[in-house]
Length: 309
Length: 257
Image (tube, rainbow over the protein chains, first blue to last red):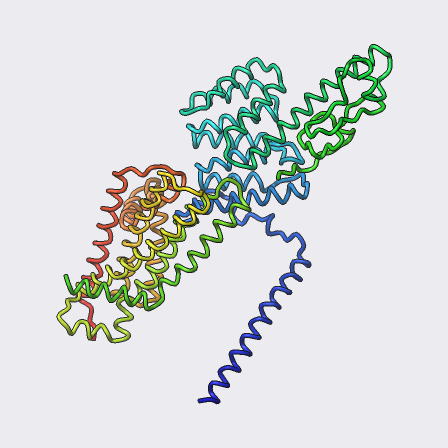
């Protein structure tokens, strides 16, 4: 009996040791394989690209599969975005599959259109696909006012297409429980005046109507950028007036203060002073802190991906 | 009736002894892992994933249990020769089949109940509160139990005349075909003549599992009409009764020598 127990213990010890060694070995080998197959084709492959077939093959569990495809779309976009890629070939098919599997998954339309429509490097730069996605979302969820809002928002902010933006906001006002703000936006678009003020209203509404932290941070980043755009535009006007008056651009803000055109050195939203260049341009001291700013950027500056905290 | 209850209780005990409820551990790990992970790798679908994954897992785990326990309910008793001991007592063959059916569905109901607690716990973890629409998850769980009723009865039907392997193949095939029942109906609508008649007959004969799936609606907090609940319940009970009757008819005539 003792001999049997000893034998059994030996086998247990050897098997346990071998198990651990095999586990360690398989991990090391997999790491080696990762090195050989750098950026393996996995993320670039859609095994099935027919939404109809994927829906059928889901055996009725299409809701979970839609969540998986949505997560895959987010991951795909995130990885390509971090790589500062300019092509997003799989993004539209991934979103198409996601929304075919679950036509009620409104986040996929809202965020997906943003991923697709924004200009590179912030997005895929495929506005027509973004519009098609949002229109599809509206067809599947005609009572969801947020989709009309997103469509109008996209037409206005990304395409500067006031006519279609007004139409989208107007359509949204007819949805049940539509935010009263849509009616204001429709009127504002019809007049298309006061661009920065309108954009500020849109981002403030976005901030107020979402529960998602990421969207709130995005709205704050855009509002900060609008403050910069507005501030820089004002300063440029002052510099132009000074140049016209004196015949040369100011060499520092002190000259503008001395001329009574400024009260003090102007500050950006982070309380850092703006820079005045020798040729009279206004620049941000840290443009990377304002990824959505359109003014105050050094010549040839390319914004990096926005950082949300 | 007492004899049916005793057989059902024994079937339940046997399933527990076979460590069937161990699947709850896998379920708990899956759900807690998903609840923590999805918030970090996806956007805005934490609640949706917990509901979709939770209900899908409840359904799939149950389908696997229903098929793999159900197919052995009769053949295992014959193999171990315990069936002869049972039938030598004043137990009718139909009572044996019906008792087995209730025992297996009872196991699945207990399993589903435990998993439901897990789903609600995970939901509370991601949402930090419950809302009134979460009550519809109970309705979705009820619909899943209705699917189990049909699957158990089918597994038992095939188990009453076939080997465990073939029973598993037949039951799983019917589960897959039943999930495509709506496509089958669409196909019937497009065909003509005899083909149309055959396809329509097949569409009505196979269990329509797609009609008993409300996971997507519940995940989006959409209410389920009372009429749908009532008719689905009636359909599942009728279909299960049909399959159990088939099993009884076959088993009554089966030569057990």
